Length: 319
Ligand SMILES: [Zn+2]
Image (cartoon, rainbow, N blue to C red):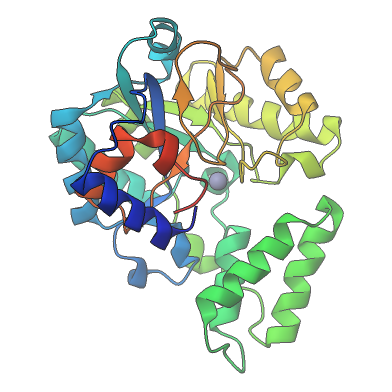
């Protein structure tokens, strides 16, 4: 569902609840990437899920009106067929998760799960979507709408076979005249492992998100295993516990395969999260494909309330 349509539906539902919709039970998993001021960064601005104030308002609402759970509670929550639960998740490992989101979560007494692409923490460098956004914005002849150009470029990148991905970045660098994004810009972009341990010690859950954030379905099984196993090994080394939770990079239905799920099961991963929208109703569920819904800066407390009331209608694929 496109954002404008979702807002209109939320506004109608907020004003006049539809009695015909059955009440739901299960889990609505919200997904965030970055929190803070989008204009402060030079990367992909669509990654900002909320301003600090917007996130604060969402948490205030959730603390009062929702039963916020974590991944270890999923089995019980979905097995009971009673209750509406919410999970908060963050992908990638950006530093604002620690600097801005974490203190707000603590202030509201809420816990979230943070999924880490370990390569960004171990060797800070630009994520491909941030680099494409940077190149679009720094083109010799900048596009009239850099955000739209970035979306087109990232969509193209996601569809490439893995062996062509790096070459595509070089080609965009050359064709735009921007060159590759200076590596120094990424130095303070990602959390450090000390920050991650602080999250864990503060009650947050940590999960894996591969090493280098590829679209796993574009890789053969042995390369998928290197991404999943490499991530699990680094998390175990830094946190002293096995990787129990995972989220699929990009997360569309076509971004992971049966091989991906088999490899995660072999690593004893207890739940893996996709990203194509929807909520998880109670009853039968696939622990290796738990749906999540995107949160955008347009999602204020009122829209969040409507989404919690009617996820069947409002928990669409994109915001
Ligand atoms: Zn990601």
